Amino acid sequence: MSKIMAVANQKGGVGKTTTTVNLAASLAAAGQRVLLIDLDPQGNATMGSGIDKRDLEITVYHVLLGRKTVSEARKKSEVGKYDLLPANRDLAGAEIELVDVPHREARLKDALQAVGGEYDFVLIDCPPALNLLTLNGLCAARSVMIPMQCEYYALEGLSDLVNTIRKVRAGLNPVLEIEGLLRTMFDPRNMLAQQVSDQLQQHFGDKVYRTVIPRNVRLAEAPSYGVPALYHDKVSKGTQAYLALANELMSIEDGLRK
Ligand code: ATP
Ligand code: MG
Image (cartoon, rainbow, N blue to C red; front, side, top):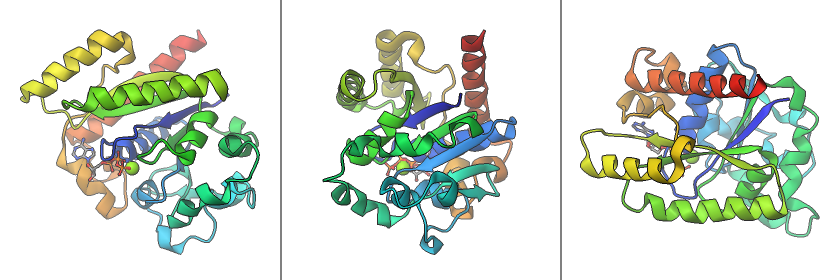
């Protein structure tokens, strides 16, 4: 069965999309079969996977509305070597259009049933809000990866997200668990970042990934070339960190299977 993981944090700009794209590419480079789902009308994960969101006729929006299947809407990211269920601004309308639809939080989950066996990992890039799109991500997933910057307000936002996950588990998706917290854009010379990182480890223990993603300009540049960082600068610290994260995830999975 594939591992379906939502990458979520309602706080904007914490590295959700950078993580989803680079983790997808790193897992694919390690031979894993990966589907990346862009669930954000900004379409950043789509562009970062080398697919122009403006040229798309069929996207995840049509899948959520039940007009197309995942197989019909997915594209191959040639540069990332994974499959992509793309998004563009059409998706912004989905929330309103789904208002009267029964089980509207489970649209993505239902649509994924048909392709589940085809992938080792399904990674869902959620938008920066606790809205119906994110809810669809959380219902479809078995776990949540939470990227976060180690800043003063980070912990506060985290409790809202943890509460939402708790509510989703109680009502909509009982198997959902926190997969892990990922420290992103980390600068070890910043004292506050160190302190927040220490607090995170105290509160969440081994739910904090050992891998830390450093602040690295190559990660920020790669999307402007429409490629994951692995194919922009393979030796950069950012690329290496996401390869290490992929290894950490795969070894957690191996541990669970044994
Ligand atoms: P949104 O909430 O808008 O969807 P996001 O959480 O998906 O944002 P990203 O788009 O991944 O965040 O990152 C925000 C910005 O920070 C982008 O310009 C990205 O290139 C940059 N960035 C992300 N991670 C890093 C990093 N480790 N080092 C340097 N820049 C980074
Ligand atoms: Mg994003």
